Length: 277
Ligand code: SIN
Image (cartoon, rainbow, N blue to C red; front, side):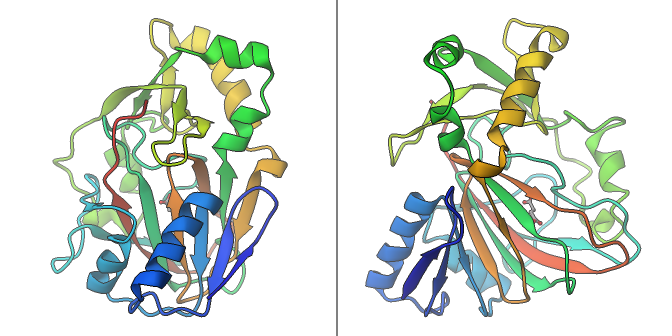
């Protein structure tokens, strides 16, 4: 197995393995690489939804994503589809998956089935590097600050109405899904690595606790802009058969919507997390 970093900030590509049949030793190296590099990538893999769920179990417990109906044989696996007719895409803003839930997703496993010839890359940002780069004064100010994250944030007119604009996925939206709102520390400590990281994002963070949205906005804007500075990021170019596994506790990601008239189809699993501390 070869593990090669793809940027100075985060991300490593792992070659020489078939993720559907891993030895215990290979599985342990992959888990270590996941924690060390925060997002890991594989090429030329072939996974059914059931096999993807099994591979995802290496990193945590697959869980049902509340907003999109999954496959009958593996309900934790959902399809993310942008068709030739779609204008909007899914995940097209910087975020950490399900940060509005009381126990947000620990990680995510995304597998590409159809990709445009060019475009449709995903960007990732290292939120721990972003925290470390802050001044001591800013770190002191953020200590104890709580963010209020909402699943409806940024969806003018409601999440359901916006999802209906994604033609390819409209039929899979769970109309019965509730709205989630959770309070989480702005600086969280990773349970496995002990590293501190910034835990807010432009998609879901509505305001700080005990502050109005208007009062919160300048600091949210500053921090979310700081977190995605180029030196904290990497960018992955997909091909059919590629996989990305990212740690939502230490990264943000952004699905770039730059392939009008082209089709992109992915399968995704999120993993049960714990309460950020
Ligand atoms: C997501 O935000 O989970 C989807 C990312 C992508 O499709 O690249």
